Image (cartoon, rainbow, N blue to C red; front, side, top):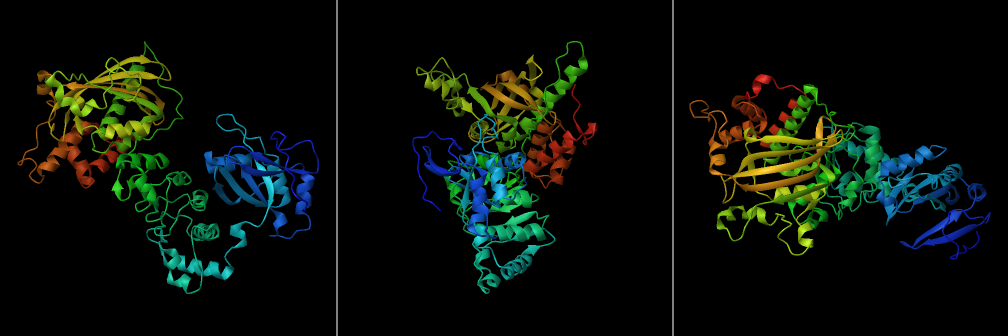
Length: 560
């Protein structure tokens, strides 16, 4: 093989007019060393007279800046444009690149033809480079048949059939593997590939996988589980060496309900718990438990629905349906907002939503000092002298918004006080405002009643729901009249004679749940009891059953 010649003067083009030669180029960004073959004859020559597994029959496929793309989307796009089916081997990321290997010169030639034929969401063409390669690591060091058999026996001992759960914690130090001199280091692609192969062949409906205490620092190899065993709902990655939350993006295709990450360095990279939860839920929006802690039920947004109910001045059916949609949204929103854990509101906001808060705070008026908890988040464009101070209180993106909401005082809203005004509507946008009262339920201001006005700008979402793109909240102290009438429309208080088995705390939970759900006290109590007095879980079950129309009308209070 001749020495490679560099041609730095030629602009970067994958295939130049010089035939039957190869050229080395350097990309300025990242200094990626790329060798590009001019035509298929060179590839064919490399593949001739080689036996299976020899260096000449393997090719490395490189996608510059491939790290920014979802693996499943990238591979499906390449496969759909490739003239022959192929099986990628050792897919992984190196710096900003995505890489994998294929065997067979025909496949390599077909992949070369895909170069610049795929466009991403920004209409940028994706480069695909093909180079001869040595045998990939996972193939070169593939476990022998007897090693695979012993690994299978070891994994069978760790499999719980009744729970469909596989416990692979500390796998490297399993006595059965150590005794047969099998070193299972799951950071190595050959070891992870062998493990996933056994899982796919023997536990295709696996629900729970425990990979704790395996010193994992990357999830490239594990990401194949998304395609091989997509049934996994519980994943334990605790006590490993994961440093970046970005590693979890490689697992986004899993519909996880429970995830364990405690004991990884990445857990210490977040300023607070709410930011940590927000980042993880961005990867797994259906997550119900994180590190053993139950999370608030998310509002799931499906953006396939094209439009809202069309405006119709003459049809009361249209306005009634829209009214029902808005009231259902508000009920669900404030049920989560008042639950004590507002992380479940992530799904209610658009990725690029905006939120602002304002209060009538006047430092010279001590009567308004009770709103001090809201002052740091408050925005008043008349007050700041510097323009940056006007923009700073604005919260952009759903994670920043929910993080900001989480630090506001815990509340209980009086839904019966709500006055809703829909003041602008198109097929694809709705603007409405909500006026009402709430009380703070903890801290020095516990029991204090506040009045608020909240203006939402929303767009349509699936499952007959709405997605917030702009949220503006104004909070003030309630007037004496508002304070006196607040929460006055609730049903009579539970007493020891009517509900002798309930503690004071449980009675308060029933009242709060009744206020938020709109159900009668006895139905609210039953819902809480059925869910072992877990307020968050009861709210999740209520929302699910209500959306399916499975709660009878008599369960709800009569609104006059």
